Length: 482
Image (cartoon, rainbow, N blue to C red; front, side, top):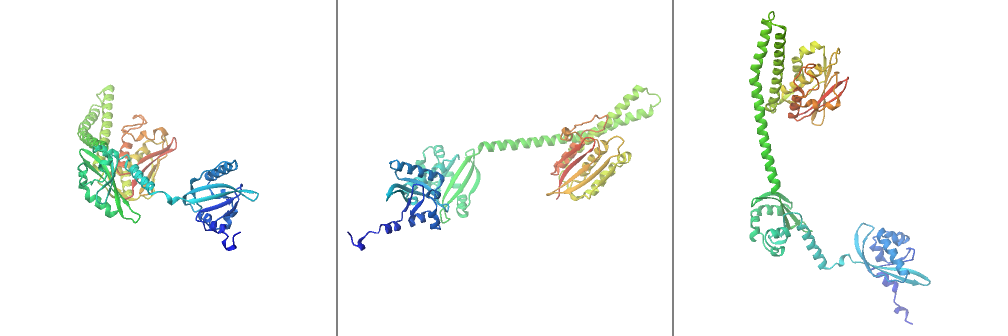
């Protein structure tokens, strides 16, 4: 029998072990855990940790694997060691190698768990392999060309697609200098861009044309743990088709702009040149009616009246067309204008219609904002004229104009008590030449609201309507507040 001082203190050996050792019963109650196990679990209260079952310390999936392993041990099967990921109480992810053994203490069978943290035991080869494969996955992105270089321009990696474009494999270019390798010599023109990325430590993106192709190029700096740029990832995506489409679109827009300008010039000239013959037709028909009043037949008078009315309608139509085509030419001549004065000017133009219909027109305080004064007079005049025109029979028009400031915009409203508009026509009424009523019932050209729309949109706002049949309509429009 050994002397007392020679007795091996197995408990001390277990306590000093750097590997985690746990003993628990078949229900998972922890009977013993050495300091290494407590430390591995990152538990701050060892006593509390021992009160919980071993499975409470494990994620559900790993705990379930542990239970199945214990059942195998109870059936007499061996459970080989296993390496498994483990999330600690503090959120850290580690890998542990686990050994489970069924042992008997007295008359009691228990499970001994032996765990070793192997997170840092990956071989250098594995780490390097992962690094290379990660780079290869990165470099073989959808980019048409991609490669890694060090600060001296040495190619560290290159994607397969670019290597094929250059007539080789990626091994042919590894270790070559981008400044010396003939297929890549064009990059020497970008030394300044590369140097700027190294100094700023910020990615640089630009477009370049080469060999009748266009590329979207990105130079990304790769930094060390100390924050120094150690490598550069350069990628290029062929955007030739997109650039061609953009060029075609620009050409189409230019052609459309030229066509619109020609059309507007034609409308302006045509409207100007048509005014005089239309006035002549109306004037001569009126003269004939006045001078031949006693000797003209009823049928001839009817014809002359039709000529006069058609001429007047044509005169108004041509006048509105001219105003419509003039909007573009005057869109930039804007100045600060007091809209109360603008509204007053519009009301003076409508004073005869206001007097004849007994219309009541009120308004809230209106702002001073940068607009084309003449055009906004036209907007107020057209909206108020419509409110008067489309009134209910035997009911004097009641019209109110209001203005509310918003986020950089003013919202105006012209509200009336007229006949109203059906919902399905809310958009149609703003279309050129669209009319909801017959011209014999309500005189007009169908250009008024289209003109308002063009003016408001040229000012950067929008116009819309809300209405209820038999109760009236409210036309809203917005204008920038300056």
